[in-house]
Length: 505
Ligand SMILES: Cc1ncc(COP(=O)(O)O)c(C=O)c1O
Image (cartoon, rainbow, N blue to C red; front, side):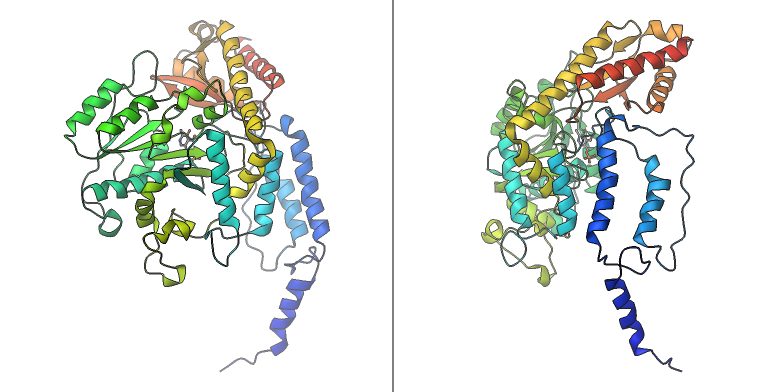
């Protein structure tokens, strides 16, 4: 039996969805855009103006909001905003603020904020550089050009935006895998991986290892190069050469670091570049945040020679201070076929097949990186790079390094604290000294450091991460936020002392 359909019902619903204001539960399109935007703007203003003091961690005392059922009839945007404000946003932490120095967490410059809001307003699907589509891919390529200039990289490198450094490493190592196959007359993208690929590294970030799993290369199929002597985290070049010789001329992939995660150490790129003349390998540099040392004339020497690398990873949401999610990959244009063969969409005529020479003229991100549909995520970076220029980024980078050094110098002077690693750039690794562990009666070093860090973060005034350096549990502070000032460093010192004081009393 067929049910008689009210012909007016659908059109009534559609009318209601499209025409009512945003207080109406059945409203998609507020006639009152101004009211909606003003309300969000006001909430954002309140957070941004008080960000410095916003708690950077939330104590366990606050009960977590409950999961709600999906409403049959929408609640209306007004009520949802009120619910978010009351139940969810009190749990959000001020991770974009100047005293959140955990992990490697950048902030959001005002220009990046403007670009990011407009990214959502325009909601482009950023793909082709030419054709009848939008110009967002062209702006992305332009932003890659600005980044090359900022970092002093040559225009032999092409690049794009992905969600973060992990996906950038994935894009670069995926291309490296294809290149490796081509050296052996194999097409891994077509036929799959049937042989082990030799991958050499000393202190690759965990995300690169994860990429080896994701790419089917195996996270255990890694040849570990010895770390240099003398409290360094970089490759020992003699050992690297020995390991290369053991490969008897087989092609391989080398993962090197522009800024290791604990002490921001840099591999010797001039020496690695010289090895490229002699041996056949793909050279990848993970410079997620350390690459930004290139913005500072005083520190640029750390990346000397890196322009010969086959691929480079950097992060936007770290020292570039654009919001999550933003990572950037650079790959030498000469490898564009390997990238294309790895990420092309075959079997989808509607996506367009391009071949051979026209690849770069008809450039389309769709066939050059993992995602098909993709956010216009270059826009915040474009806004920020153009707004502050080379000098602006030099100032951000040099300020971060200065603040890290000032806290590190202070730690060195405190009998209760001890640096566990040299402070090279913008990261500090420290622990409680034996002396203070005794006085606060915490027997085991690792446990006492964990407990101290938990208490330090609990106050919500500073946020740091745990780490392990040369087998010792330690506390790590990483400075990349554009706003961190000497006043914040004093504040951090006070909170550290107050936390130590709790244990003494
Ligand atoms: C050196 C390095 N590489 C890669 C990553 C991964 O970055 P993401 O979290 O943006 O994927 C990080 C993150 O801290 C990093 O420090």
